[in-house]
Length: 507
Image (cartoon, rainbow, N blue to C red; front, top):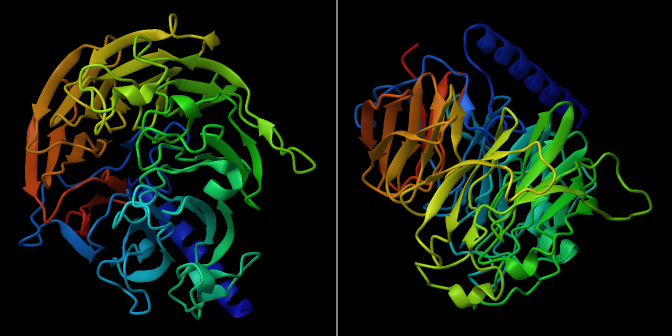
């Protein structure tokens, strides 16, 4: 085992050296989490990226990896590996039959499988863990650890090497974790994940997930900030765990629950808690930003130290901002299927940029009103800042699931009305819009002077970044696109439901 550990460390060291050389060559390097560190801005410093490609002829296609039948997660790239959630249809390992959720660890060079985390479904209720959805949360990688939220609502810490360097602890139940409850444990192999620790959010934090577990884990020092995905039950009218937290903090090394919000969000959740936490620093002060399932944006003081004696602290709120103050706040289930009047919620991640927060919000895509907005919020205020922090509001066409990209004085954001918007960051005025062929659930990526985005109608768009609209290309792909494109080490990664495309100009 010691020999394997040395070999694993050598692999990591080699990857770090290669990344340094890539940066020197003009590449920005790895993309180990959703968006830029802390701020969550989906902007990359990569250059020399493709502006068009052709899967049929292989032009500008480095490789293509087959995934499951549904892939909703966005990939991350770190240390020569790509981490991506999908499902088990068709199985990569004949030991695993039926509906399973996977986190794949693929080789960055060719898309080959290195190892996989296999997770069974949460239960028979489809609204707890939607059939075939797979693992939808993007992973977060730091050093030799991979952090992700599984379809069962488990926050897990994984060894980046998988089982190839042995089964590290303290968690040792990987064989049992891979099978349904009361199933016979499987023998652990080299292509299986190595779970270091596991925190069962529904059972240990007292929550009730809806449709699955959503969210990218945010790392701040020794602390992990995690969205619990607390939501309604299968009636869509009852919050089973109204006292459950929406945002929790775990110890990065052990998985112990350290802190939670105390905002009483549960009874006001209209559907589920979708948004990932973000962080920002201004005037030397750090804040954690989180959008609750009640449609309200919160800013918290970050945890300074782990509480002693197994205590769980309550996060200290610095401010709250309600982006839709006239929307219903009580008895919210009465507004189900109302496309004119309903509560708002936030499905995207807030983005921090130059002392401001950019948030998309609006009616629920399945159950609420059609309206949606992008808002710029002054993040430096305190208290209830609903009436004082709004800088501007820009109405979008229809429901919005997308996180905005802020770059060079402009904001790029997509919506479910098949529209890509370019908005002036200073004024909130629209510079241009572009209508696509299908509605957009993914977010935009801005990189190398280009705006990349895919749609549910499987068309992938490349537009020129800037105040004048220019379409560079549109490429029809094999299946729908829900994941956000990612750029790393000179390669653009585009994920469809069934395939991962690594796109690069010939070297």
